[in-house]
Length: 194
Image 1 (cartoon, rainbow, N blue to C red):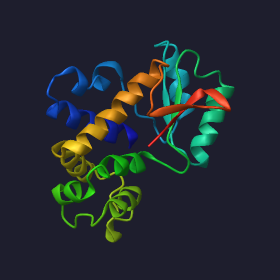
Image 2: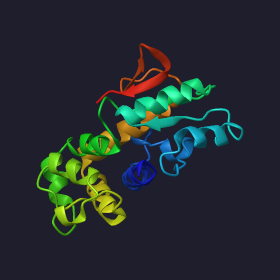
Image 3: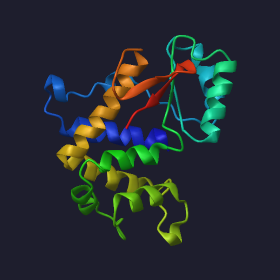
């Protein structure tokens, strides 16, 4: 679902940018997002490595994500690419919550869906949950679109989304950015800094 959410986030920022250098989003121009099948991160990186010299893998900050980091490093990744991961215990849904949290009241109020979330924390919990009867939104593309549309309509949230996306571009160039820090125990890994 990272593929869907990052693509939608990029689109929302692009649709509302002023086309001025400080507000210009280069994510869509420099980053190609490839979804993995059933979290087959290592296999996808292996397959793509022959096609492009700089493959970046984005993994969660949970135990499975840390396992992917280890497997990628054991397989020789990042080669000339990088491994990017969310902070400990974070997933893409937490990053979306961080973006919404730039102006949570306005953004939550702007989400157009049946049974909208009450708070930013509620939104993140529901984005992580596949339990539809309990309000879960995981893999619900129309709900993802509603959330990202709201992000795009709120200046502070859109600016934070731009900050995240541009940070992803910068770190893939292995340049310093306040938004990502190299893991002191593994120089191939860059960790998001909210």
